[in-house]
Length: 464
Ligand code: ACO
Image 1 (cartoon, protein in one colour):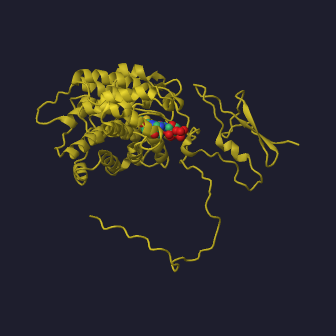
Image 2 (tube, helix red, strand yellow; image 1 turned 45 degrees about the vertical axis):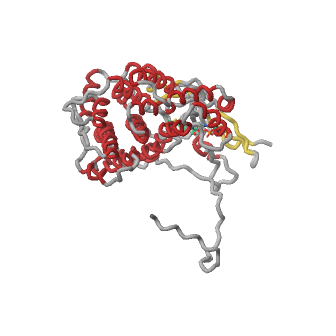
Image 3 (cartoon, protein in one colour; image 1 turned 120 degrees about the vertical axis):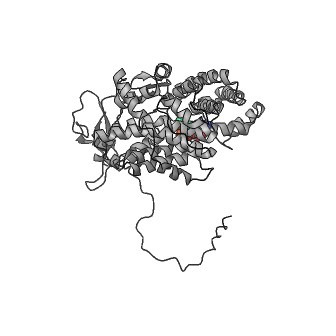
């Protein structure tokens, strides 16, 4: 006979859940039934149950209760967020409700950064104050020069950026007052202002060039290009097509809801560390080739292919799982064409009209054409993602391949900061601390094995 042990008529926070429905669960171990409320749908209809509600399902009162098992968060919402909306099946991306296509076409990157943080587009006076504050915090402490000088000439710029951003926390100890909205504001301004300066310094270090200080008469993107490329000219005049392209690429990369690096920023920030340390964690996560490092990996892949005639053999290797994946293809969320990739492709055409066709564009286009017609990619819903064409644009602007992910990090700082503040001000959030299912040894007594004879472990060869 089925007993209804618990009817969870209230959500875990104690609110009554009216008219949103519930799921009935019967535990075959105990023959007890449970009714788990379904949370009211989000604005776009997303539904969920609270994992904590499952804790009541247990076989005895002293048992821990049922958990959910979800490696890689394939089906777990870690927060409620009002910042970015993605519909991966329909290829939709919106920041605060505004379609990415319209923002890329009409807005500036700093306008988008304001929007992400504040939820609304800025008025002219909001915008002027925001741009002023960011512009006048672009300089970094002179000790940062000495810090960067400690890196080898061939250090990867993402490694340098990650550590210098983390090091900034030592210059601003008051940033740890994260519950003070004024301190949060100044930290947000400092990060948006100084990450481009640090990024440009990392570039110059790699090239062995003197650092170029910020020029506060220039706009955000122009100043960044000036710090990267200026030589002896008294006034740097950036190529307007490059400025436009970078502005659009920064907007496209500004946020992407709960991706790997944003999750890292939220998780690290949930320990209430200062935002410089939390953003450094985001940069570390972005560095990986399965995330922001993909734009760099796409270029290496195209160089390795070398010629369109080699594409079929390369694709066969990918399909056979022999070599690498088709980098720049596939996405955890998008199961159709990444809307950012469409904009980037059009942008690439514009840039190449100005600087000439990139020799590898032909390979990229042919790769895309073959993959989009191949059943392996179609059946797995693998389409080009934002990184497929960005690398080609960056290279035509003469950025070195290793620097591509740094450009991504400069832009994503805006989203990371908005998400970090949303997490901090969300009353439901606590320190991020997942559970595990322990599958190791049960308790066993300690008995030393140091006296046992085992085959000698080969010694590490001496370092040359
Ligand atoms: N090339 C070939 N096969 C692929 C690719 C790819 N790029 N991506 C996924 N697959 C295959 C997998 O082998 C798997 O096949 P199987 O079912 O036969 O085992 C199937 O598609 C599903 O792949 P998963 O790894 O389970 O998908 P997941 O959602 O975990 O991965 C990811 C998403 C990491 C982006 C993946 O598609 C990938 O590695 N792409 C290449 C790297 C890349 O471009 N990353 C940038 C992402 S965008 C960004 O971060 C800004």
